[in-house]
Length: 305
Length: 305
Image (cartoon, rainbow over all chains, first blue to last red; front, top):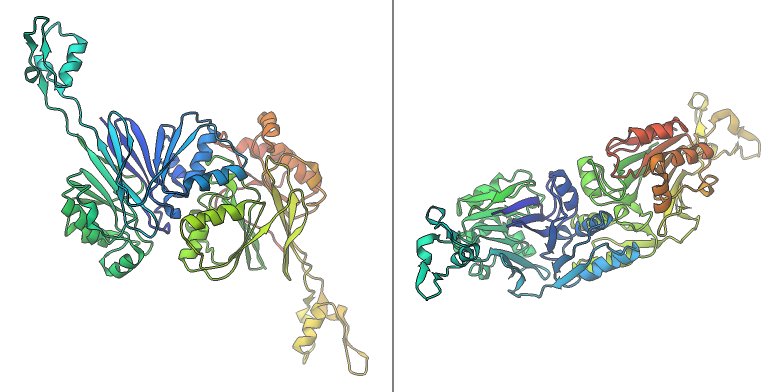
């Protein structure tokens, strides 16, 4: 089952050297989520031949332009292409006003329903949940209200051991076995003992998006042991004071969070326009946390089951 | 002296095949004007290595997203790069609210002053003027309030015929000759008769931007005999009914306007995403008006003196 992050943009506030503003697609078990939507995100999707028709949920971390200015264009495009399914937008206060103001002056009434979900400051809350996936906000520390997003697969069903499946077993009995139940005969005697026919469920995977944020250890507990962490690394260590001043992080700080949280893999992004060559950013992080990758436009990062 | 139009984007409402939403730069005698500013315009300028620091006037034809959604990102970038000079924005009602709403939620106070100039519906009016250039609105016919822009050089000074310049002539006397004046001695006798030392001024060039608009002959009189006309050609003739319905033009209609107005050259743009190959658009226009060019990203169209 799919669990994949696709990078559409990983630039900081200023686009530079072909790097685009923040935007990602997160695909989990055929659900398509968008995380941030910087300017040009729809063009990036076209370039990468990614369809946006299946995106039903867009999560905006905060209302700095480099994290949402591609949204309005994407909405207009969806409208022109006659989308009909509901679109859920998650954001701190203001996005609804920003969007409805622009719809009003363009005299556009979208072909689909937009459902706004307001995020609250410093709140850790499950904002999306279905039978397979949950999304929880991560309180971040930035110049304006800002949230990260933690994607988790729900616990999965047990797997049937096909080598041991008895002849004549019914479909509803298989479903019960997957849920971990034993199957009984009418007289109450056991027919199929669960442990004889099943394997443990596959593990539930997880991904956290943390951008933009100053270095803050309080997020460590929430993202403990996750599979994949995207953490902003706007600066290298030589600009630590600038990072402190602007409430951004250095690569070393991002790697420290990854290490403390014992995540499996770290993705770095939101690079400052001052860095043409990002090798120093990568090397700085590697010294603290070896399993690290720079998030580059077009990268697909798959989390294995 | 410079007179050049640079195409940043020439796509219709949907970006397609690498074509970007509408945006142009117009450079006249070292003045830099921007006309429309579709999503990604700042990235296009970076790609083409065009500085936006010298742009002081941005003209937005109308508030459909494909004509202005790159503006907010450009303003944020100018702010982050600590622009200090005033920026003049010309638009129909709404742009000021759209921009100030977004500035408010991002808690940004720009490093420079933004001066909004509101355009009025169906008005033909000079909205910018200095000693060398004027910009006049062209009333267009579209689904929402929409204006084109007519750029004209002011009448120029006469040129000094350097082969005939007398020894000992003073700088202020040369300036007077350029203005067409004769130079007199103190006793009232003529010293330098203007026509003996001067050549006629170079001609004043002109450019009109007309997008988006339905076919309408009423603009012909205003753009009569101009050097360069950009006219939208969203569709080819096979989609004329679609053009009528959406208040856009076909290539044939754009060429008809160019012919009726007796312009020197026609530029076509705002191409529908349904056309991958634009040759039919070009050929259709050529049959009516031969001196025609497709506006493609990165094209620079110079008007000679």
